[in-house]
Image 1 (cartoon, rainbow, N blue to C red):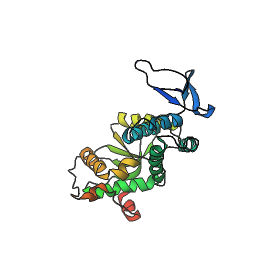
Image 2 (cartoon, rainbow, N blue to C red):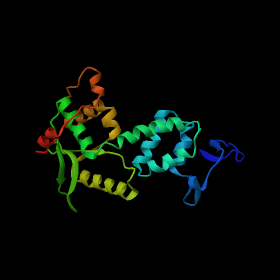
Image 3 (tube, rainbow, N blue to C red):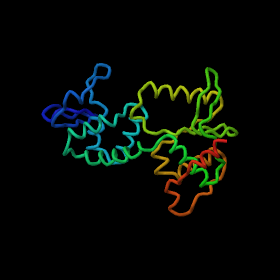
Image 4 (cartoon, helix red, strand yellow):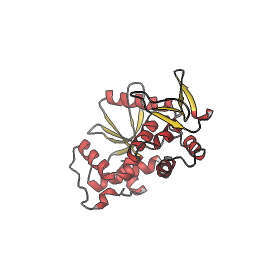
Length: 231
């Protein structure tokens, strides 16, 4: 998709032209010398043409790549009141902002509670794994199964270097014989039943999931459970 002022450009085969009223210097960056819209502005433009599911995927991809900036996107929305997709994007961001209130430890506790709910052997929490080149700390580990679960909260304050370091860390753990699986806060809070099923399959334990809609609600844990499971 190519973004141009309303009075410029025309469609070509294989290229979708997205015409807009205004484009400020704040909305423009350069990638390999080519002028492009910034990530926040691109997400706003995509909100005009994508449905909610595809828009959420675009936001998630930006977050995974370490290029998502919530503050910058809020700024773009404030400058673009009345845009067709702004309401859809704002609704998604409101839910994302709620997610930022969850700390890393709270997300870990939710995963522990999911394990208890489905009857899976609880993992050890915040353990150190000794590797060539130095030890690393992991969120949740089943040592017997050599399975590590990492809980990915929001990384709005993160950067590309942190993203690269996480991937290097995962690769080192994989070379050491561990399976590393990452769950996002969105999966943990919205789809705990799916997270539970996947953990059960990875651990090799048949899950005992509730038959009612309670399976769709994130279970709760507490500090006592967490302390006991640290081992």
